[in-house]
Image 1 (cartoon, rainbow, N blue to C red):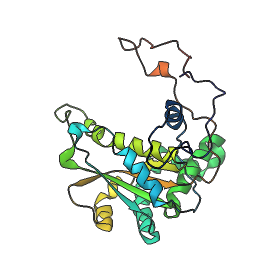
Image 2 (cartoon, rainbow, N blue to C red; image 1 turned 120 degrees about the horizontal axis):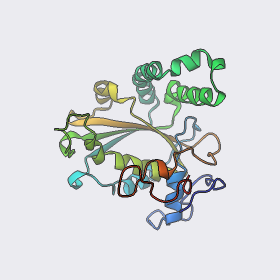
Image 3 (cartoon, helix red, strand yellow; image 1 turned 60 degrees about the vertical axis):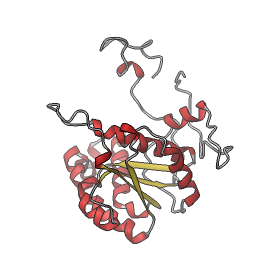
Length: 250
């Protein structure tokens, strides 16, 4: 499907005609969900119906995993006190991340930076500071015995274990978008894994993989997301040889 500058995203749910037990999502709906699922930082306070979450989980569970072990586990947090506790555990990691990436400097002296950069950093900081206001928190974990880690012996950082959990996380994000819900997925709660496990009663064999804030988007959906063109990352037969015409899918 060719991308054009005029193509825009649809507001609200992408599954308005779908019945609760029907999974006849067309390819157009799927591609639109993939292209139009932004990270959302500001949410309405409206509650999210449990039935909607169940539909999302029911579809997301068909994600691939090593050996089809399906090691994902999710704790849905809606209680205000637990949401506030998760915010308190999230903020130290967030503030350290801001110092590391220079975001703290942007917040301290916004007039010295591009407005778009300032707006993006301020939005992300608002999300972190007001995390307790996000209606639903999904704390996603994975059973460590279920990970198929085939690169453990290589002389670099291991990444393959994520293949058994992050396809499921992406399915969650797409399913939420199809239901008209907004989301923000981060891993900044992971450094507080021990405290999160204690708070939510998560077993020792589970490793934290992601935190997803979920709710109805407070503002309009963006018309278009900024992503690199296909020619920059997809190659034909040999590294550096573009797949297709440069600029066609941009």
